[in-house]
Image (cartoon, rainbow, N blue to C red; front, top):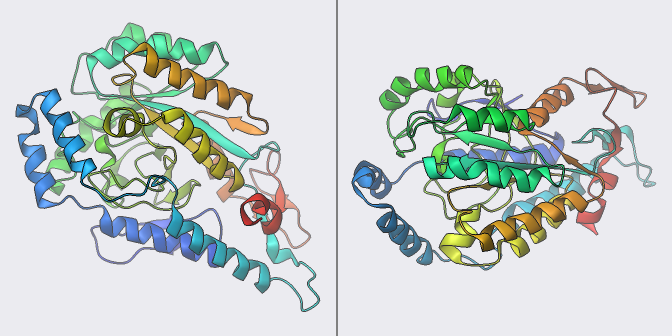
Length: 378
């Protein structure tokens, strides 16, 4: 276990997908993200005024702010992390090779995914408004025709929740999660506010049989979030410079953050691409997913039925669903399934003879680092 230790604000025990030099890189980028995950005074003032601002003005302000950021066109590629990862991979490989180049058992790791899968893909939706909730079933039917199930995160104290829609989503095999308290951006402004809301958030989790949580605007404080009574959290990301809490953990794999499995989203959000930047979401998603596949990572996507509000946007999302459905060697899984597997993987060990023991032994497999990252390092 690796502990972040820069004070009570963010201290949490962490356990990453890999140990060695790669694990140290994952820890360093996670700690940097925790230090960055603080709202500026400007954003604190904005969220205090936000309830009084009409939606069109909020979007205009967001576009103006994002347009002022200096970001490359491929901002969704974690360049700094990939550079550090490449160096760490070489260190780990060299550290476990003899002078003659024979690979030793230290090369061995548990593959991130079960059943011969090369990558995992999980489609998720944050429902911000009642209009978005009403649109959920039409989007779910796009997925259903392709054999896809997804996760839908509700804001429990913001809009009336139609239980008929929720029950129909659940009957179709989808997962229901909780998306904060009321989506006002103030959940992490002060510990007093967070403490006053954590009870109702956990109660909503029980009410809607939710295994997972995602914070609105992906605000986060990993220490405070240990009060969540959920199996996993999905509020971190590998890279996303457009968020109010900047940063990014770099890695594209789940990890343990205290008692929670943390599932980072690794594909850019639909709102950022379609609404703010006005670029082809499909092209970006496919390019990023190719990178994630080379890393044997998790491709987790956040879309919003609130913004998939036109035939053109829904068609673009459908194209990506079709692409995902056609991928070979992928594990197309719900977040709760990924969290369950990750706990099994983290509780399993590789023995001296190279065999895998523990709860992941039936579905898991032992691979070498060079084979796991072969297409990335080429």
